[in-house]
Structure formats: C-alpha cells, structure tokens
Amino acid sequence: MQYSANIEKLKHSFLPEVFELKDWQTLEPYFIELRDREIKDKKALEKWLKDLSELEAFISEDACWRQVRMTCDTENKSLEEAFNFFFLEIQPKIQPYADLLNKKLVNCPFTKELDQEKYFTYIRSIKKSIDLFREENIPLQAEASVLQQQYGMIAGKMTIEHEGKEFTLQQAGKFLESPDREIREKVYRGIAERRLKDKDSLNELYSKLIGIRHQVAKNAGFNNYRDYKFAEMGRFDYTPQDCFDFHEAVKSEVLPLVNEIYNAQKKRLDLDIMRPWDTEAEPSGIEPLRPFTDGKDLLKKSIQCFDQLNPFFGDCLRKMDTLNHLDLDSRKGKAPGGYNMPLAESGAPFIFMNAASQMSDLTTMVHEGGHAIHSFLAHPLELTGFKEYPTEMAEVASMSMELFTMDHWQVFFNNDAEMNRAKRHQLERVITIFPWIATIDKFQHWIYENPTHTVEERRSQWLNIFNEFSSSAIDFSGLENFRSYSWQKQLHLFEVPFYYIEYGIAQLGAIGMWMQYKENPEKALNNYINALSLGGTKTLPILYQNAGIELGFNKNNINRLMRFIKNELESL
Image (cartoon, rainbow, N blue to C red; front, side):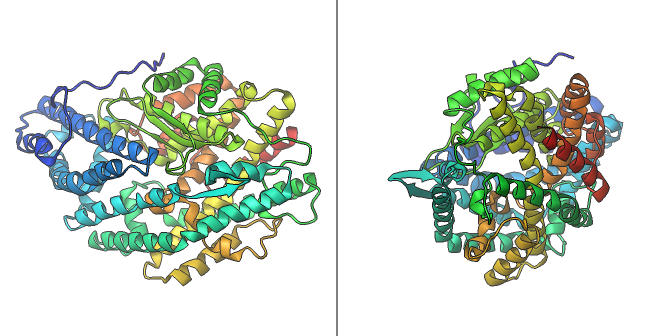
C-alpha cells in the first residue's frame, strides 16, 4: 500500500468551517446537540460518532497548540494565560458532558450492532472513562494541569555561564563531551549547582501535585494514585508486578553490560577513576561528534536520512517544515526536553526540541521523527478515538527509528570512523538508558504508594533507588547532594506521571524491530508501517504481533535482546 504525507486538515461538517474557541458559550451548544440528539438506528449512531469525533479533534488540537506556544516561549505571559484559560475554564466544563456522551454511547441499543472487532478497543476505553469519572475530580484535575506546567517555567529559566557566555543547560551539555577533564567537571558541577538553586521550588511543586493526584485516586475509589493511573492509562496488558520484574531483570541482565561499557570508556580515556562527568567524553585528540550546525541543518540532514530509509518518511518531515510545525533549536526561555505533539485535525504533528549540535540531539530528532510518522500513518483512521494508540506502541515507533536510521547516518558524518563512533554511542545508549528507566519507574511506585512521605524521606528513598541501579564503574563520592535531587531533571515526574516504563518496554520492542531489519529490511519496514497504521484500533499485544515483535519484559527476553546488542557493539 502507498502512503502519502500530503494529508489535509480535516474539514468540518458538524462545526462551522471557521471556528474559534473563545469561551465556553461558543462550544457548549455542540455538546448539548450531541447529548440531546435522537439516535434511531445504526446509521444514525455512526453519524453521531463522526460528529463527536470532529468535536474531539477540534478541542484536542486547540489545547495542543496552547501547550506548544507556551513551551516555545515560557516567558510570554499571554501564552501562559491562554493555556491556563483552557485547563481552568474550558476543560472542566467539557468533562461532565464527555461522561454523559460516553454513557449515551454505551447504553445505546444500536452500539451492539457496530463491528465489534473494529470498535473493541474504542468502547473498552469509553467504559474505562465512565468507571473513572468523578465530578469532584474535575477541579482537582484542572488544578494539576496548570500546576504541572510550572515545571517548564522553572526549568526554562535555568542557565549557566561558561567562559563568559550564557548557556541553557541543554546547550551546556555539549561541554561534557570535551577532551578537557577540567572543563567537563566544571560544567557538570555548574549544571548540578544551578539545578540545586530551584530544588526547594521543585520539591514544593511536586508535593502539591502528589497531594492532588492522591486525592483524585481516593475520590475514584482507588487505594493509591499508581493503581488509578494504571487504569486511566489503559494498562490492560501488564501489572505493577510486571514492572517490578522488569526492575529486577534490568539489575541482573543489563547492569553488568552497563558496567562493561563504562569500564571500556574508562580505559579509552586512560583514567584510574571514572567520574560522572567522564561518561560522554572523548579521548584527548578526538573531537566530539558534531553531526549538524543548527536546527536548519539538522532538519535538512534528517530529511535526507529518512528519504534513504523510505521516501514517505522524508515527505512527512518536509510537510511539517512547510507548515512550520518544527521548533528545534535550544534557547533561553524555552521549556526543556523534546516532544512530538499530535494534532488531531491537521494530521501533521509538531516537533519541539532543544538542539545544541550534540550527538544526542540527532537521536532526539530521529526519535521524534518516528513519533511524527506514527501521527501521519494513524491520521486517516475514521474516528479521533481510533488514533489514540498505546504509549508503549508510540515509543516503539520512535525508538525503532533511532535504530533503523543508523545505516543512513553518513549524511551527518564525514567518514566511516565517525559513523562507527556514532553507532557505538547509539547502541551504548540503548543499553545504558535501561537503569535510568527502572530508577524513575521504581521511584514513582514508591512515591504514590507512600503519598504522605516527607521531603527528607523522598530524598533518602530516591538515593537508595538511584544507587541500586547505578554503575559500579563510576565513582560518585562527594556528589551525594547533587544526586539527592537529580530526579528533578526528569520532566515526566511532574508533567506526565507514570509515563516512563513505556520507554523500557518499547526499547525492547525496538531492538526486536531492529533484529528483523538486520535480517530483512523491507519486511521490517512493512511490519513497522502496518502496525503504526492501526493506531489504537487493536490491543497492545496484537499491535506488537503485527509489528512482528514480542511483548515481553521478563529476564529471558531481556537477556536475548541484550546479547544481540552486545554482539552488534562488538562488531563495530
């Protein structure tokens, strides 16, 4: 099947073609019409679902743009106010109507006449929303939505000075690759000390969020927010115990490989003692990899790289560029991190990142590019709800792209030696990211199982968990104060709670995709495209099955995949 990136913004048939969300009064009549409309047969139900889908797509895209604009410029108060207005004035008024419409669908006598296979995951998700909805949670969820954006406001202001120039923390990260160890240590400590200046503000913010989230869970009849969130995120196919098994498997099957990688790095750098500012460094005489100069260059080269893999992939980035749906360079006042923002009406999503000419930025770009392709492929699906795919599959889309593109990175590098270094960097990162994923996930389980903990207990527990998954090859002595608050750099804890284990599950899936690709590139890419085209219309195990991979994060599967990556590393 041929796929095209020339998708067009969805046209309105229920809403006015030109429609602007100014206030609740302009929006409410459409909810009332859907609530009161008589549904006489299956055909009328399908029309009702399409109209509801159109309304959902419009609202979703409006909210997404408010977030995009605010994160691109955290110092613009009017953008912050527009974001807050939606989540304080609009979203809370939508939720009771959404619950009524969900119940109307589930109770409609013609719902059972719908294609049960086609609508299974959609109706399952609707029933889950009905089960979780509580009127008293509406103001709490609105407050949390606004509060959690304060993280980006605080982090966006963080800069350090180095050699008389000001750098964002993302930009300063490139100095950790310097062959000069004194510079690396100075910058490492500078970044860590700058983070410490806001540790109390971030602790206070996190405590507020934990309190609100715990109350939301209690109101919905759950013992803790962890159990509530598993239900809300639709984690139908694995349990907290599976996560605990994953943590243990990372310790036994991955951490020994991480130690090997860092011991090899220590040998490369000719060091007696390896320190945390040495992990990204190059030996003296070898310049750090600089795969691009700025955001424009990164985009141009990424398009060339994607074209070689599959011209459709390159077309997706070109389409986004034409629509100005990219903001790639790091700058002061911009929120940290990177994301691909699906836009339900436009189809072509928005990529946001903080590029600073580092190797890790190349990885981020192809990662978010994988997410973007997922957005393009799911866009033709009939209903907005069909496009809401599981996050574990979303991350397979992005992490597989990191690995698929490696053989086409010559557009970023001048020679085979640089290519090999880049591939080694990527494959080592595939392994070394697992302990951090396990650390963040295990920390979140503890946080929400113990919601009344003190800030000191939080600090102590974080250190215990962090040390549990830290490499024995690195000497962290004297850095306990920095390490005590290093969790604060992970925006997911503040903005998207419990969204992190997905990276581990998906990384395993992505390695499986790459194993396929090494054997048969065409078949692997076809499986990848076919699975992503299903959006959220199938269960997670069936999506993985369509991709030709196994949903499993037990010790045996992890061991098998780690051996494969180790062999690939040794072949470089």
